[in-house]
Image (cartoon, rainbow, N blue to C red; front, side, top):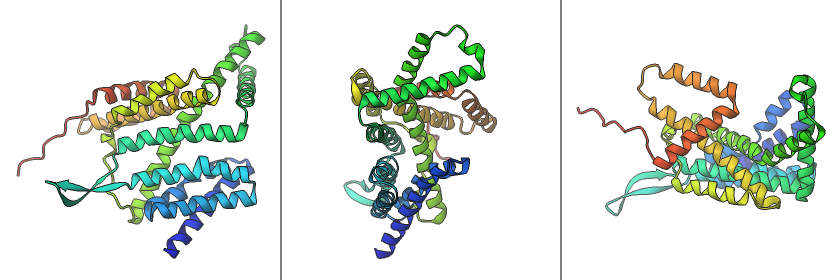
Length: 321
């Protein structure tokens, strides 16, 4: 137990160090910053969720002492707790029962539910971090509007034809709309990042031989239908004032990203055993990279249909010996 505690402390300090290097403002520093949740995820899945909690606490304490209490709190909410929570869920399991008696096999937490929790975690963490960093919602909106306006002006300077005919009022309206969509855009990105962290952390733990659960069949991932109620909740909250509205927009963005991943998994699933599968999937990923938002929207729509209908690729019966 003491050894595991030491591993947790080292992982937490490593995660805090990765967060701290962002002040260097270099591409390498940004890349290292983006990897900050991985040490906590790795120890949470490779040792235990308690070790992950030690890592989260030690990293938070280190940043609070070295930098500031607010920086430590932001790290706890945006990096440490999401990494620990997802690592904890990934290793949830219970013995399978056969005829009322344990069969000796384990039933692990389904990847579809895990994906739903990734989206919800991303939305909650994002809004809490925004609240911590901005305080008043009006101040947050004004800051995002200024940022959106600056980005639009920069684009117009680079390509003057795009800004031809735009008046000052038009620029203000566009900036307002971009600011309104900002929580959804950020939550979409955060959901995709958390999913990557979870996959990468699990792979590292699996390679080390410490992953307790067998590697799941990721193409068979199926979001539970009740997770779609989050879309309804997000739509209702999105018209609310203040941070409640921001959370609703963030939840819509996060769940849209989860549905896009569901659609991607379904395409992997349905193409299994088909001729030309590899070139097809490579082309799909290239298309997603080139079109970005458009491809994600199409995948999210496909994922929504899959989640609503529950139609999956038929499981083929094993060959008869």
